[in-house]
Length: 381
Ligand SMILES: Cc1cc2nc3c(=O)[nH]c(=O)nc-3n(C[C@H](O)[C@H](O)[C@H](O)COP(=O)(O)OP(=O)(O)OC[C@H]3O[C@@H](n4cnc5c(N)ncnc54)[C@H](O)[C@@H]3O)c2cc1C
Image (cartoon, rainbow, N blue to C red; front, top):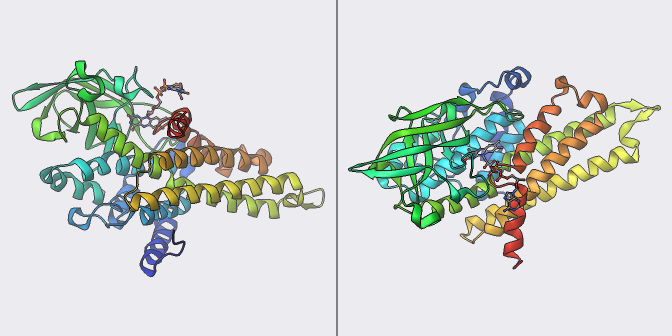
């Protein structure tokens, strides 16, 4: 593994740094309180090329390899404090764009990818249901073929970007008797007859990333909007999930780096008993632990992306990176609050929000328990 960036990579990463710190810094306290999604920032990211980082130029992307992509997203997380926007972008990239890149027909790629890359379209992924979460393939939503259409019935829950989505990748059973092998995937467009995206869900963190329940009542989807073959849905989901686990928390590594720097500054400035609190060993140790978590998270992220870029199987590496980064992020936020004392608990200091934003990372894209199950199974347990 080469630890040096090429001139071209360095140029892109510096440009993302500048873009995020100059164009994506806005008042997050109010936006978080009111759960405001920043459409303008989304469009700016599309204009810069963030959403299209891993997509080939032919479809409007920047054609970056996985390691450059995750490093760019890390810079986005460092410069942009809107973890909700970053999460919406990542959900869109890994759960809508990537399945299209790998499984879309030429017509589907031409129709959707340019808009999904340039910020004019918003995508998402609807798999979870009220009775199927970690056991995703036990879903109940059905898709029945009727002439040149499928008729979808059922509902999805916890759909990131659901209320603002232009197109959702929806998983439904086309053959119940076949279980997971009977699941198919569909690109369902906003405005499809029988589709209801209006049910927003309030949540604890990443509040600027809209989430909703989605209902299908005799929802009509044209046959040409099926992604891949009938019955290939669970295989496609597993493949895109590996990408998602490996990459979705890249921005969080940048967020952790920013938090670490904030804590070092504060520990040097804040004085108690006539000295900087950073001179107290128990405070310094927390900062050292934060540093260790940031570095180990970054290495696992880069290693997974490096291996994926060499077309190696990264099922294990992706689960390990997801587990390491999510748990590190939560613990870094807890330490950051403790280091800031009572101030860290107050909204104004913008650290309590980071903790609320971080906690969800132990739940989405497979809970920490599910990541541990994967790692155990890969170890032959
Ligand atoms: C912020 C956020 C965004 C999300 N975005 C999306 C989205 O865009 N699209 C989408 O489809 N879904 C989304 N989800 C849903 C997410 O994928 C599920 O919440 C997750 O898969 C867990 O499912 P569940 O909530 O039903 O919990 P359950 O599966 O019911 O789990 C409950 C508890 O039991 C544990 N558990 C379950 N099974 C096992 C097992 N086999 N071994 C050990 N422990 C187990 C879990 O780890 C957890 O602690 C999102 C969730 C969150 C929080």
